[in-house]
Amino acid sequence: MQTRKRQMDHSTTINIPGIKKRGRRTLIYLILLLFSIVNGYPIIWMVMNSFKSSQEFSLNPFGLPIDWIFTNFREAWFTANIGTFFFNSIFIGLTAVLIAVITGGLAAFFLSRFDFKGKKYLYGFLVVGLLIPIHSTLVPMYILMQNLGMLNTYWALIFPYVAFNLPITIFLLTSFMSTFPKEIEESAIMDGAGVFRIFWSIMLPMTKPAIATAVVINFINNWNEFAFALVLISDEALQTLPLGLANFAGAYTTNYPAQMAGLTIVLIPTIIFYLVMEKQIVEGMTQGAVKG
Image 1: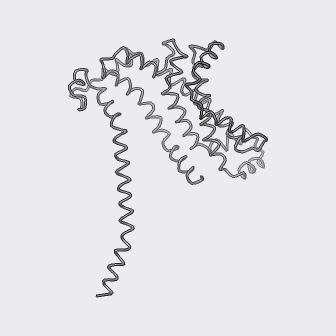
Image 2 (image 1 turned 120 degrees about the vertical axis):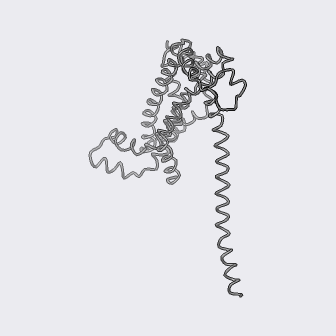
Image 3 (image 1 turned 180 degrees about the horizontal axis):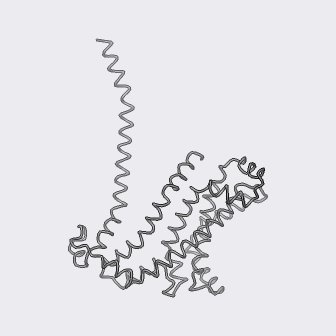
């Protein structure tokens, strides 16, 4: 009897850590589920109401549409001229991302792989841009663009977007490239590769996860930016989506389904862009966790 009792006590002691572990995991899953619902419900509610009529939205704002109305999207696309705004945002956003990633990648390569006098000060000078409130530069930026004759051009937005996304891009890529062993470059030099060949053919492919993270951050910042577009662009043919949607919302203050249809159109590219880059982003975070 005593032996059996000791065995039962021993088995109970062994199972306690497993029970605690399962309890913690269940609690974490419940918190993540609650977090997903809180963040996902407004998006689902917006998409759901974009298919309703104005009358149905007023009577039943939280239920599913009785009649699915797709004309709201056509009205938002053509009447609000969202097609033009959509193209402008895509062109400006992707161009700024491309310039920022290539420029930031080159800067990160030299900061992480070469030793030279003043390297720490240069890196600090570039990264301190993360601390500057971008909206505090609106007036100087307007005066600068006016003197350069760039107001109401695509470049009036591309240059500021590149400038204010460079600090985070350089920070991410420098941190990632610094973890690579020096033997990689030494082997490439022994094979006759030059500096730019090492950067383009070796460093960039190895830095793909960090580049994916930088691309997503850059694109979302450019896609959602409103203040610079409002100050530097007055020509309706060059306006971006946030500015165009603000004007559309002002003109359609009583037609909430049409506004939500326009917001849904704006949301789709961001979701698609993130889903396409999701694998690289997760890989970058996990590799950074292992290396860091």
